[in-house]
Length: 317
Image (cartoon, rainbow, N blue to C red; front, side):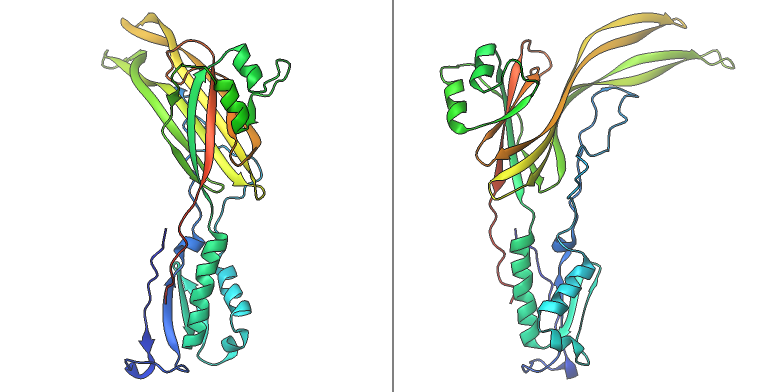
């Protein structure tokens, strides 16, 4: 992805050309370097009043999310590593305003600044990861083939390609596929499929008017898969994940102020964990039901995480 670079050139004396020693003002758009990726945490499924976690990113205490570089650090980096003697000369300056890098210097300095920005974008740009998840029916034979020890309490494992292929050989059940999820390095995001239904949760009589007022709430059934991916070495990544499946198991009804009030029952399965995964391996999670909330039985969730390769930014000058 190439970020547009806004270049404004003002020449001293309103000339249309510039000699090598002329001082030129150029403005570079560096908002991509200063941008902090926004988190998109998954909502908590269930009944109204039980969604206190909504809006809070699910992550560990080691918060590495943030901009590639701050505005102050960018200015200091340029002054320190790009012709540092030039910035002491009268008329030359560099500053950041509203995400724009404003540089006043000679053409040679601008060429160095432009080249450095391109390199910093390559070196410092956050990785993008594509997350593809599917679920398959589970049984003791499959779990053993995937390396889950019956005595172990671990609910997730990183499975290499050969072992996964052997474990799935001969299985004809069609896998349920999730929509693809894309996340930036350190960003918390999710995929969600939810079914909402309204129900009468309470009925109160207004003593002044005698009118019975019904309280309507919403039942949220469905599935969420939330993930944060961080690089932790040349061949490995740290994956923080959370999966939740919620489905209605029926309702009871009561008569309140002459109104049928519903008391829905909801079964919620929620698991989370952190695991280091080597590139090319599949994250397998056990202990979760089918994400459609209806199909019975035990299932294994298989999650493939791939780093997206992006094109290098082109030259600005």
